[in-house]
Length: 430
Image 1 (cartoon, rainbow, N blue to C red):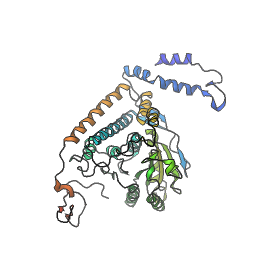
Image 2: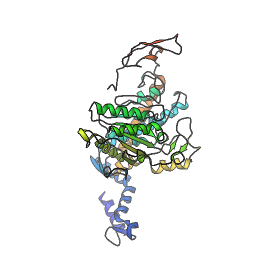
Image 3: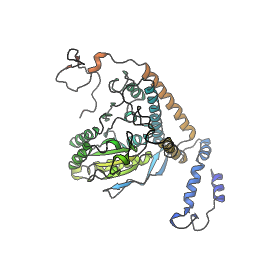
Image 4: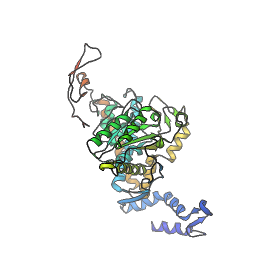
């Protein structure tokens, strides 16, 4: 490491004014900028040298990507720290989701997954970054692109994969499928466009009413951003100063329509009008995490009577590699070159891997080992998802109600009823 530093310092000795390599004024290339680029280029070699000694750093500092603000004076922190343990956790989670979604797509093509299937590949930094900031008491509700969310909120890989194939080890015992997965403080994927946002406002109301000092994160896509029910939810949340964080995952396309063709205003973080907002680079997991830490503080402190300052509207800029759903090839309204460019220059896993390796939080060998473990975990889950048994027909009406007033549930016709059963423990009961 010292030898490399000396070589670079002698070959790339700064010329001109102190710290300036060449050029004049604001466009000048600074010595510090060139040094940073050089260090990034040599990071793999320097990592190998450091790894040979078996030493890594326990913590490192990183700059967050610039934020854009609406009706706010102070942005989230411009820098943040990340521990080695957190770095390895975030990397593993993002790789699990990427691998899980790849396996989901393959199962769909094999017709082992029926119905709708919406993949999250390319957007992993959002759910991993948000989850990294959330506390045990905070809640999440999202739309139908929910496999990764179910995983980071506590569902096992087997639970997600088996739910996709309709098997008994699925998180909803195979009855929910791709769009309907639930666990503690995760109020599920929802199949109706935008309908989860008013429900999220209701969860936030419950949190405030019960004085839980907890937020509810409600996620929706840019395609749902023009729904009238979103604006009703904004209004009610602001009127009651609810601890609600509304997040638009802007991946550029609502189904097959680009945001520019669908929205008169594409600044989704300003669409709450009287609700403050923040724009976030959703391809950087640490920038997402820091913005959510800011949101938690905003929504739970500093307001009247010990409550928070009300809701926020966030826009997280991201990109999806697959089509809107598995029935959409995703190439009729955008070029393959566009997708490939994002994969090569903005991929969230690639960017985070470069960051943590360069900072000495992990070695390339450690990350390869994680990749291998992830591959095995997902492959094993796929085998279970293909071979696990389906629930018996008598269970189709199980766990519909918390306290049913009537235990007879109508079947396909009035002449083949089911009897309500309680099989699983009730979760998310306020």
